[in-house]
Length: 380
Ligand code: GMT
Image 1 (cartoon, rainbow, N blue to C red):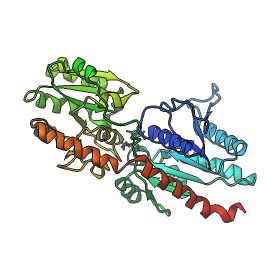
Image 2: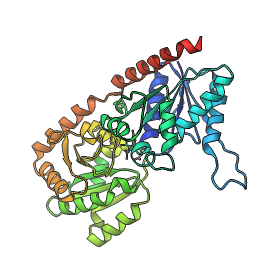
Image 3: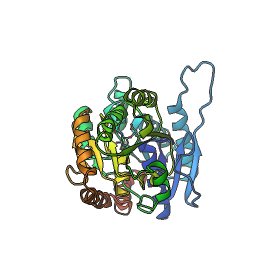
Image 4: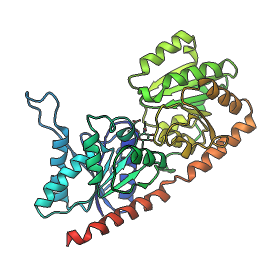
């Protein structure tokens, strides 16, 4: 198949999922065309079946906001026509679904049929998509998508509860590429971070408010008073300065390292004993699944789709959002007994195996075929 993938290229779950999916489809022999405004961060190696088309929007003094949505639609029209794409897969509804719909309408007038699948990732529904400034457009473009998938059952339920949809939503969970995410030996790095053999607690995110990174710092502060440990905070974003301030106030700066944005997350996860994800909202929690694939148990909130991957009392623990004391108790419970910690690590890994890309990829391929078959009569 010739597949067009539209996504955000930056650090962030939806872009990562889109890129990994595209690379995996390319390895299977499909021709994959990424259409976005800069090269996706994980598109870091050459593959003969992968193509990248950059969207550039002409700037003009009249524009207070550059109309990216129109520029994207125009680029889609161009790529579909020139590369003769079979199907488009857009990740994150805003504005990708409406751009795809506009491109589809333009192409229809030229006798070209291009079905598109929209994958819902989370905040495109739970936070941004529900806002009146976007809602009617999101609802309309979902109802005119040829297929809709969601990364968790929880997100599907939330979408159906909040939007008037005439279409079914297929749940296709996010996945792990075990060729990349696996536990490796990074003893030298571990010694540098925790020279006294301290346990290592880790959090990875884009440091947005919704991630509640301050909860990680407050939880850690309780744990470090009972168990020698270090906290690694990976990523960057608007909440980082607040977290740094909080560490100073709590007086635990010597035990906390801010590592900023990192590409090789798997090398960092290799030395972690516990992963923390206290998010207010999280449709899936890919960061937690990546940790589990590297044998790291998870202390998390019970928000959104997290309970679909982190199994309470088995792969880690779930707590109500904001219940820092409960999270700290659970962390201490796991870390205070080496045998227990090893068991949780094993369980985390076996659970992550259920999300192996080798199993999820055929589901996407099957879904594309289903969508293509449904539009086939129109194409003839
Ligand atoms: O809003 C974000 O945190 C980023 C967002 C994205 O689309 O880049 O992440 C969402 O999609 C990820 C991949 O499907 C999920 O793992 C995250 O749970 C989800 N984030 C939220 O729902 C907050």
